[in-house]
Length: 405
Ligand code: ACO
Image 1 (tube, protein in one colour):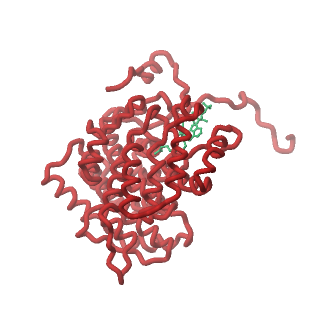
Image 2 (cartoon, rainbow, N blue to C red; image 1 turned 180 degrees about the vertical axis):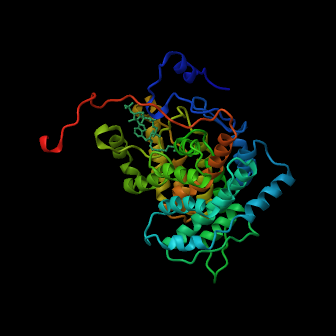
């Protein structure tokens, strides 16, 4: 699997020549055995397993295990992993006072970024970065605690008391209860809600060297602790060109409003001066179709049908997809709907508020981030990440005293 590779590091040592590659479109920053993408064929494999098979047969927790350890677990290994994750779901009580310091209307991604980073101040004494078992435990803690923190951030933002994790529930249901349960009313969740969320988590769990994972690795390359690395990954994910796209898609669909306005939106997206892009369209690597979008599209219809939700935004989304796929501008540039085009409509149907969409992505991607961090930390060839630049500033010149300027 893979394309031809030139070892630029070797070339640099021999000739002093280095490459100029803004956005790293043709630069591999590491070797990795976790995820494989063939953007031309629309192929995505986690540890060799096609995403379609994992989406159909697996669960997010099993996928998290697969990404972290490299193999699917036996029943015994899965039970032990699940037990260990469950054991670490609680948040330190002192973290609640940390939450209380945020403004009531803070964006949950801002809170998540800060609170996850603060975990480093809670667990630093127990972390020997040279000990693989300590690193593994930090990874488990992150997989376990990020959903708890995410739900706490949401509840804080709406003024509800933080809900403790119910450890008799499995991962996704536990998260949904922490988000939505109120003491007086036991939460009745339709099975399709947990199924859809689990699927979205599987599809978002990893995507090789995307911006946030590369950020986790770049920070990790300095020897920083894993909580700081993942907090940096959360910050990178937040941007609308990356994980923030799911929130931006929904806002865009709301702005378009009705299916008869789709033509205008298409024309605006084609106009470079408008500053408007079709959110949820295009991908750096997929230039054919995003296999995750195909799976999500099907689930989107199932969720709306089973929950009996009639969402006019789905009609707008379908018209937009249909119109873009017929338009030369999008066809020539190979701009297809990506994973985030439909995920927002599912989240909306599950009553997850728009500001939480990227947080949902972060919960899932934590599995990928920690897998990459673990892989990097045990890679004997790993180096500190330190890109070069093409300098475009002034030539060397003499300092002029303030009075003479
Ligand atoms: N709408 C309109 N035009 C677009 C779009 C879009 N969504 N995406 C790319 N283009 C155009 C660009 O203007 C450019 O046109 P040109 O060749 O005439 O100059 C061409 O397509 C190539 O675009 P680039 O920006 O060079 O492509 P790149 O690979 O750098 O960007 C990206 C990929 C960031 C995803 C881009 O397609 C985009 O901004 N999409 C919208 C945001 C989005 O959905 N992000 C989620 C990505 S998936 C994820 O992170 C989970």
